[in-house]
Structures are given as structure tokens and as C-alpha cells.
Length: 407
Image 1 (cartoon, helix red, strand yellow):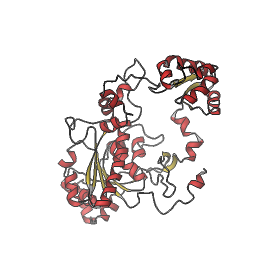
Image 2: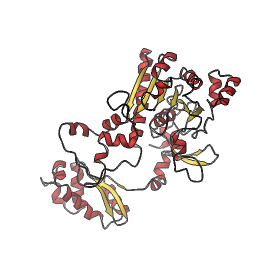
Image 3: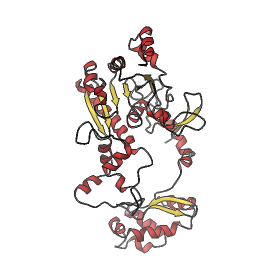
Image 4: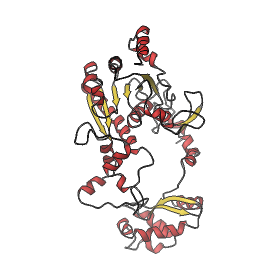
């Protein structure tokens, strides 16, 4: 299918499928902002509430080259409007509740109990918006013995068991190179908000949604927690696979590829390709369990075949036989890929300082209601006057709030 065919019936009058949904987001760092980012990318009007000094992600290095703008802030706060409020101040709390009264969804990711102490917790917001969907994202959830623990992404990776399986066999556990716990929790926060909105639209009932990084990592662990709870020892395999062989990262003459087979039919093709066609039907090799039981031998066959060939040569051979393979690329290599550009995964975006950067685009494509990076992450408080005006805060009251440092 051509791109033009996919978008042939696209509307141009909507920012995305969530047009008309309003989200008030009081968040910091990554998990909460990612939840808001997903909803904003889908077309919701997301209002980012920050302390007047700005939240953490604005100050985390590195900056985008040639700018003083943090890569975190510019990545996760795009498509949002920015308002500054000191939620620890009674006036800041009152303004927040006026904003929340206009919202379909409120998202926060402070330590459990913090929002309630400030007077902006679920019970406080429910009093001003009875059908609100209130999403709290934390390390370990709003209840349970560990609920009060500081909940950062690496700790959730460790506590969930995820980190224990990451890394090379025999080596130490290795954290993910990305904020994977925060990312998954943010994504589940957005999914849960949409599910709760569906319930609200059917019943008129709002609700409190509790999202924990540890729970989300357990859920996305491919069933391994069930196996472990039933006594199975789970080995650390590095780039190899529990369910398939030969498979993993293999060295070529000029770099590495990820390659292998999962299906028995693929093994028949590969055994012929590597010059061992007799193994395609041999009972010691023909099935996935048989190959997994002799993983090292199976991987050695493919490793020997790959070593003298270039990545491009091996990739052509595999793809000509419909076998799965991909060169191991850097993010820079991926960014230069024409396929990625065709998919709008890097979109030229004017930043708050007037410079331009290729922002990572929304991943899901909608044929009727296309999504995009509509606006860069906003300068701190860029929409404060606009938003306070929307909820009836007069210019005189705004001046008083500014004088007191509330906004």
C-alpha cells in the first residue's frame, strides 16, 4: 500500500482521534509525562502543570546539539500547553482545581500521598469534577507494603525481576538503555485512561486509576513471572532466545546482525543455506525444542556462516529466502533510513528557541484522523495567561498570583 492510499480519506480538521478530550497533567521526569505525551499525540488538549521553577526534565542533560534545551523535555512534552503553578500554595491548589474541573482526565506521578497532601488528590478533584478519570503513576502503586518507597525506573527494573535477566550469560545484570519501566507505565497509564473514559461515557462514572511501574514491567515480562512462581529457573541469555535456535546477534566481516529462525520451516531453509541440508529433517534438529536443547551447536553453525560475509551480503541472502534478519544499527543509522522517514518517525519541528530538530513522531498511524508533532515542547509557562483566562482568572488576580510566585 502506498502512503497516499492509506491517508486518502484523512481529515484535516482534527488534531487526532482524541480531539475534544482535555487532560490536566501534573507530572515530572518521564512516566507521567509519557502518559500525557501519548494522549497529546492522539489529539487530546493536554495541559502540563509545572512548578514555576520548571520540572526536572527541563534540566536533565544532554541538551539537543546547538541548543540549551534538554532532550528529555523536548521529547516528552511536545503537543502540550504549559502553565506554571505552585501546588504547595493554597492559591496554586485552588487554580489547579479550577483547571481540573474542566478536565476529562487528570494525570499525576508524584510519590503516593503527595498530591493529596497538596489538596489535589483524587478525592479533592472528584469534588469539583465528579466523573473525572484520575490517573496516578508511581513505582509500586498506591497500596501495598512497598507503596511508600521511592519508585524510579531502575529500581522498578530491579524489583520486578526484569533486570535479573538482562545482560550476558555469566555477567552482571544490566539495566535497559532506555527508561523502559517509565515508558511502559506511561503507555499503560494512557491505555487505562482511555478505558476509564469509555466506562465514563457509558455510565457517567469517573474513577481512580492506579498504575505502578513494577506491575507494568511484570505484565510485559512475557509470562516469565508465572514460570518463576512455579519454580522454573530462568537463565540470563543475553541476545539468545529461550524459545528459538539458532537465533541472536552474529558477527559479520563488517559488524553485527540479528538473525535466526523460529519456525521449523525456516530451519529447513537455513540448513540448506549453510550447507547442511541433511539437518533440515534430522530428528535432533528438525524441531524448535530439539534445536534449543543444542543451542550452542546451532548458533555455531550460523556464526561460522556469517563470519566471512558482510552484513549487506548476509542480509540479501536471508531476505531472498524470506528469513528474518536485520543489521544491528545505531540510532543514527536508523534515523537515516528512508523507511523511517516515509513513516514520519522523525518530523522537523520548530523548537521554543526558534531552532529546529527532528522530533520523534507518533508511532501509530490513523487513516482517518492522522496524528503528528503539532507543536514543540512549550517554554515554561508559555500558556499560563491563556489557560488562566479560560478558567476565569482575571488579569488583576493573575498579577497577584505572579507577585506571590504562585505562577
